[in-house]
Picture 1 (cartoon, rainbow, N blue to C red):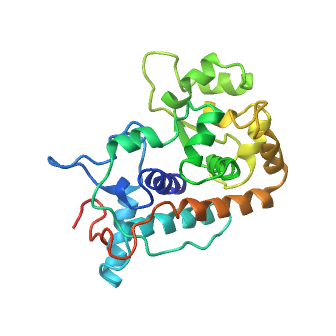
Picture 2: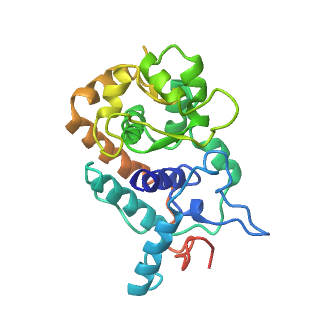
Picture 3: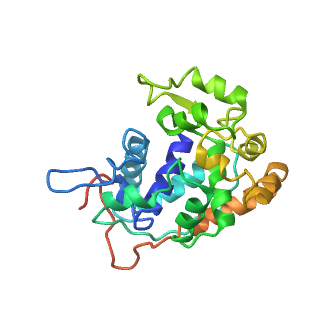
Amino acid sequence: MGASLLRLHFHDCFVNGCDGSVLLDDTPSFTGEKTAVPNNNSLRGFDVIDNIKSQVEAVCKQVVSCADILAVAARESVAALGGPPWTVQLGRRDATTASLDAANTEIPSPKSDLDDLISAYSKKGLSTTDMVALSGAHTIGQARCISFRDRIYNETSIDSSLATSRQSNCPSSGGGDDNLSPLDAVTCTLFDNFYFRNLVKKKGLLHSDQQLFGGGSTDSLVTTYSTNTARFFSDFAAAMVKMGNISPLTGTDGEVRLNCRKTN
């Protein structure tokens, strides 16, 4: 579940800041972010957050926000899978609103080109180095066939053996959209630098992954991370702190939800 919990925090922060909006369920009078294209049938781990929240509420009622729980869960997930630690700043409050439109437009697509990625992160105050480091989160977790089908059948910047092996579980037509493949085929449950080692070998699963290494401005950084785990870990940890600081609600803004799925 670690990769999914890390992704929840990312998809929360990139839509109106790290405010827990991604956790809100739709109601007859409210449309949340869960049905947005990047999230629908894709995000998971909501039940884990519910479980954490209920245990935290039992100990100290209405003190720890759902947004903060996402931030801490992301760090603990990375730590559990062998990644670097970082100090999570706390005190975020929870949004009473959400934005389906922003979720559909602000979260980078797996089909993004390098310029799109740099721009999407820049809009959030994150540098190109932050973007490349955070992309290294794809050293864990899985992707759905629909996210990489075009790449494995139509692109040339992919190792032929990887393309062939992924095609067996992702038909070119006739279904299989939700079939999963690991983003890092070598060590998919270890948080390490193999994502970058794979990119240097044209073994990025998503188009947006391989865009980081293919003759563009980020090639040198990918090469560095592929041989220097300590540098990747250091840059990743710093970038996670920056991402966790995107437009938080503090003071009397927002609320501390009692149930992460609905406003108080």
